[in-house]
Image (cartoon, rainbow, N blue to C red; front, top):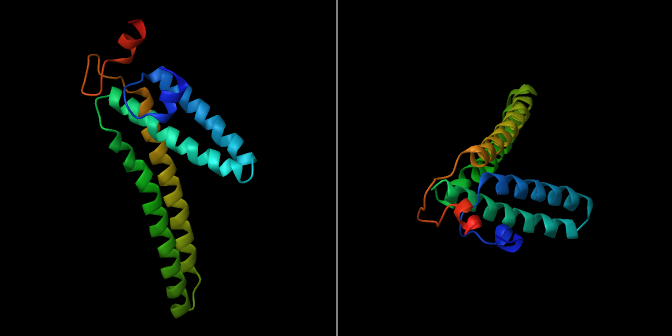
Length: 150
């Protein structure tokens, strides 16, 4: 498998080793993108697309649909939006009751939500990167090692 199809195609299967090599390359791309203003944001968006393709192929190797990665992707924003709303509600309650504790509790909830979102993404990445793929051919194609040897 070439680099172009690894990062820009969601079809096929990849093994754990290729996944971790691709993950490290994308991590490096994100770090470099953070240092470059404006162009770095474009590089970051391209790296996110490549991440989705990489995870999809790894999930395919496990016999699962690529749609599984929506769980951690959507969990983070849902938690953070809910926490941001709780900060606003806490501020309103604090104003009504003349206390600042309600707003501070909302900020604490935001920090907890960010931590939960980070743990969810980290756990998903470990699950995808550590779980063995299906040994034989599945609906997504041949196992990656068979294709490399042929």
